[in-house]
Image (cartoon, rainbow, N blue to C red; front, side, top):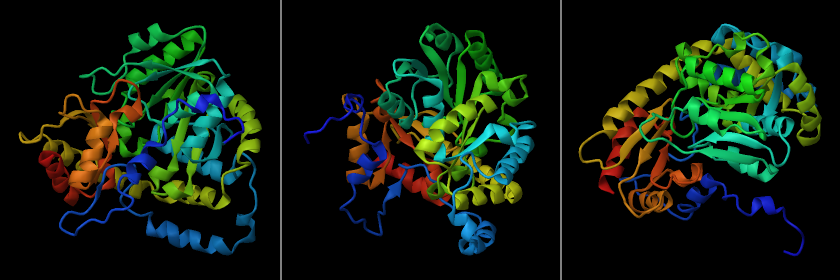
Length: 388
């Protein structure tokens, strides 16, 4: 290739899920030992049947094939605002919501709006891999904070405060965490919000998996006066309503930030697909009970996974877990997470992600997405780890 490629991309890892799935692309699996997929985080259940039936007539509506306003249809944004008010007790106004093509595009919008190349964003490890990949591609410097074994995946406010410099533009957090599953307590988030306010930077919180945590764990940041001056949220209704292929995300922020972000939105995607927007609105208006039932199921699955995993014959150890994920230390000294993950794929027909995909110094770990599999499959999955 003779033309120029951005040097920012040279040091960025390939997409980890694509890499792991390439290890098994040419393989077939016997019925007595089928593939167990703990790799890509996708709810194992389909969308609500009532939603599919309600959306079907829209396929014949010519308006659904047209652009919407860049920020999304007003009625859809209002449905989302109403959903926030029910779940969080208070929430953004409709004008403080921009519909995006998945949470990943919402993250890009936030970063391009908040940062310039050369700026810094504080990133506690382990970090959701797409975040530092995007930061590095844009030329923003991820300021990594080392993972603290025994912390349960919770960040340390003192460690974050010590990392803030004149170049810092945001503190980046994910709750529930991808990859540890850790749910950040409301008091901790309020403390970090106040830290961001004191330093006049943003607290950027990715809450893609928020509905897999109990409502009692919801933060109260939207109740803070002028919350939008220092708080930005990334949302994914694709996980909430099992619509991952619909790419159903949102950027939640102050009107001023949304107005600035629309200058990028218009040149990036114009708008989220109308059909996806209607799906989000229908889910927000009708599926509270369905979402709560799925959260209870996921909590039961998590409890079963923890108890099943902690058997004496299993040398892998849980470091942190919750919501949708388990963050596991592997027992093979001298082997990277990638080597161990590849062995699991080749020898035990089980795929998961290596720890180093989530940041430097994490090759002793693996990420397991137990939300991908039913409770009935958990004992077989644990047996694969024991067998290795």
